[in-house]
Length: 71
Image (cartoon, rainbow, N blue to C red):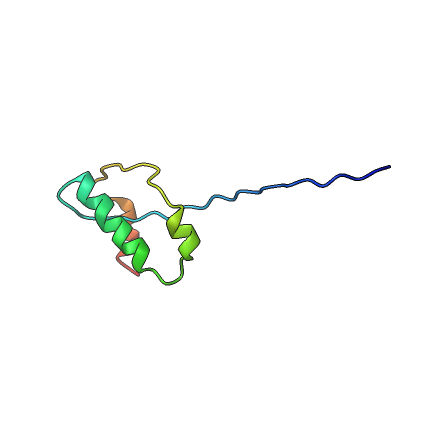
């Protein structure tokens, strides 16, 4: 059987969630991107290909906030 050459691209997707306190969703987005770009653990390629999935207002004193107080 004759073989052929194929180009195969595999895409992986991961996400990071940031909880930002800001005056507006737009400002929260700016701050989140700043936080991401400052994170040395994230590769430059990942940063370059990042995009906002969603921005949602959450309660100020949520259960997650209470869990994070111990960190």
